Structures are given as C-alpha cells and as structure tokens.
Image (cartoon, rainbow over all chains, first blue to last red; front, side, top):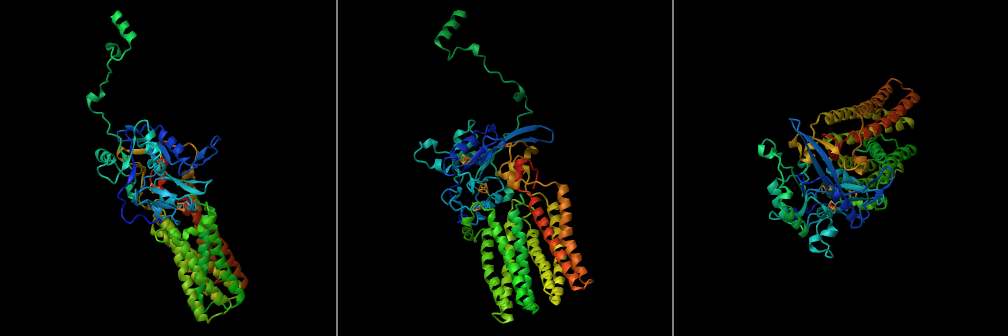
Length: 250
Length: 318
Ligand code: SF4
Ligand code: SF4
Ligand code: SF4
C-alpha cells in the first residue's frame, strides 16, 4: 500500500548526522555498500567497476561543501547524504505499484524489489537523491536503515546498529528512535539544534543534521597555542628499563 | 530532467490521439461527423492507434514491463496509477464510440452520447498524465498550474490539426472548415499557455537552494567543493540533465514557429486557397510542423526542468 500510515508512526527510527564531527572519510559509504551488497538490497550493482568509468548503486554518498560568509571567511563541511525516512515521504505516495512503503511499526521507508516495476518515479519525487536505480536488476534501491542488521538476532546486541553508524571512526552518526523525546538521539537533536534538510519540500524528514559548531575566533584565549605537556617531564607509563635509564641519567 | 524518448513520444502521441477522439465526439454531437466507413476507420483508427502506441511506449522504459499490471493498484495515492486506470477505463467508451459509429450499430444520437463519455474520459486521462508531473514539488518548473494547462490544451490542439487534415483528405470540406476554426483557436490558446508557462518558470522565485538543501545557508554562500564520485551516476544522468540557455532559447523559437506559428498560418491560408488540393497540402504541412513543434516543446519541458537533487551537485537554486 503506497498510502502513508494514517497516523504518524509512534516509533521513528532514524539517523542523526553531526556535521561538526564528520571528517569526510567516506568510511560509512563504503561500509554501507559492503553490508548492503550482501543483505536485503543485494546486489548493489557496479557497472564497469575496474574500467575507465566506474559507476554503481550506492545508498549513502558523501559530499563536501565550502561556505563563504560576508567577510570572506570560509569553512569546509563534509556532508553525508542518505535516505531521511521522511514522515510525509513523497517517494511512497507516487509509487503506482505499492512497492514503496513506509512501515507502521518503525517508520522505515523500504522498496519491495519483487513488485517494483522500475518506473523511477519515486526517484523523481525524492528531493534528496536518496534513491538509485539498479540498471541490471531493473528495480529501485535505497537505504534500508540496515533493517537486516538492526533487528538481526544473530548479532550481539551492541552490533545491532546500521553499518554506517558502527563504522564511523569519528562518531559522527547516531542511530535511534526520533519519535521518543527521551531517546539519546532526540536529546542530542534538542541540545545541538538539529535541523531538517529542505523543510520547504514538506517531506518532514526523520533524520536530523547537527550544524557545525560556531567558529571560535574573536576571543584571545582561543588564539593562544595550546601546548601539550612535554613528554620528558614525566615517566608515568614508561617501561621498567626506560624508568631505570631515566633515574641513572637524571 | 533527462528527456527520455519513450516518455516524450508517449505524452505527445497519446495527447494527440485523445485530442483527435475528443473532436470526433464534438463533431458527432454537432451532427457533422461523416458517416462513411473509410473515414471512420482512418480517423478512429488513428486516434485509438496513437493512444495505444503511446501507452505501449510508456512501458518500454520500465525495468520490469512484465509487472506493469501492478501499476493499476495504487490509484488512491499515485497519479501514475490513476493515469493507468483512467487510460484503460477510457478505452471502453472510446472503443464503443468507434464501433457504434463506424458500423452504425446504434442511432447517431446514441453513438454521439457514448462519444461524449469517451471524450470526457480522454480529458481526464490527459489530466492525470499532467498531474504526474504537476504533483512533483521537487521540480518547480513542473509543480505549477501551467503544466496541467499545457497538457490539456496541447493534446486537443494537435488532435484538431490532424483531424482538419483527415476531413479535407476525405472530402468532408464543410466539417474540415469547422475543425480548421477550432484548430486555429486551439493553436492561439496553446501558444498563449506555453508563453505564460515559459514566463512563469523564468520569473518564479527559487523554491529550494544549496543553502536549504544542506542547511548551511546561515554560513554564507554554499558551494560544492568535492563530489562524492567523479563519474556520472544515476542521479546525475536522470535528474542532472543540463541544457545551455542559448540552446534552450533557440529550441523555444523552433517550438513556437513549428508548433504554433506555421500551422496557424497554414490554417488561415486555407481560407484564401480554396482549391481542394491546396487545402489538403496546407493542412498536411500544418500537421507535420505541429508534430515537430510539439515534440520540441515536450523535449524542452524535460530538458529545462531542474530537480532539487542537483542542489547537492553544484546547482545554486531550483
Ligand atoms: S529521503 Fe527521499 S527516499 Fe527517503 S523517505 Fe524521504 S523522500 Fe523518500
Ligand atoms: S520505481 Fe519501483 S518503487 Fe519506485 S515508484 Fe516505480 S514501482 Fe514504485
Ligand atoms: S542505515 Fe544502512 S543502508 Fe542506510 S546509509 Fe546507513 S549503512 Fe547505508
């Protein structure tokens, strides 16, 4: 059924992406590809992978933007982009077959690859480019919020988070229930003024982005170089021989 | 947006077919539709043939054409599904209209009434097609009333030009004259609607910007400094199609000239050159010019439309 759930879903599983932390390493995109090419969405087709024009289906893409303010000061912001599991998902309502749907129980937006006719209309309806068509399979692919990982009882409890979240070396991605105001992710969004992408498109995204923290210039204390304590001044943590040498020499 | 040949052919062909059938119904109501079988076969055959060819071509670009039947299921929410349902439903009265008229199976009055139902369903189908595009907020150049107006006017306009030619070809000059007047009015209307459409898409304020797409607008100008991939991907091929302004302006002049001005001139000339052969030739030129013009217009409709996803790939505003 491609009508959206009649009531907004109570549970809203989603991601919170911290643009202040993301270093643009693409690790989440690579691990997303790796997990999903053998999971529910398998295969995530690659065309000409070792040739001159490699191309393929990815569910997560990392952009880098540069901002310039009126004083000409620039800032670099790395920007991961994947499905936002929108509450008013236009990709779902335009689907003529019912292949695209939003789950009542947790709000995850999925594609049924057995009934998708590959008309591509859902990818036209999504403002965020979160849907990529698989030319070989003839069906649409998108982020599943790693549904086959987060509910996977064969995995230890702590591993039941999306692949992109568990792999991020900087901790820029958090996963949780954004429908529960007391969840860790909701508190994070409240504390850091998390926001929606393109609110004017009226999709009501579940995923939130946390803005880069304000620059710290203008205050002298921030400008002073911060020196680390010189290693020579302490033998804490040094090995037995090193400490003996230190004693003999000093 | 990528101007896919199958979709351009589908919308122009089925639009012209439905338009032709609408005017056949109008002539039937006016009591001017020729009853001879040859005309019936050609006119109804062409109308229904264009519609069918268009619908079939729209399934060519599907990844799984064998599952196309599933597209009839989601008419509650999806305009694409509604279009499928409306198109199939329209075949019933249109087919009956054709049969009852060509083979005189029912009194002319009854056939005409069935034709009116078919004409209404044809317009409903064109409307659902236009709403597939008109409902997409992601593409501001389509998400406006002019999109619907364009489809609703251009299909019947093209159909009227074709019908005027068919009537002249088969010697029904009186009916040809009436349809020529209808076609001329529709051409003027079509041109006005398209000019207003183009004016609208170039003057409407931006809906989304690189600033709102990233939420970084408060930091100043937002520019892409590194793309996620250095080759084109599906998103850029499908939705990142770009056409130089210079080319767009030239193509628009071609669309205006061939789609509207030349056919209109030909139709007006038929009032002066009344020899049957001259009339036929003029109307034939009108038909061909109109096809090229309307196809160019439809190609531009796609090529000029910017999609919100391009904001993540360097576009500043859509
Ligand atoms: S981000 Fe796009 S694909 Fe995901 S739910 Fe929203 S509209 Fe649909
Ligand atoms: S491509 Fe598949 S999922 Fe998307 S709208 Fe068409 S049928 Fe639905
Ligand atoms: S939640 Fe899973 S599918 Fe979605 S972007 Fe992260 S790794 Fe990819």
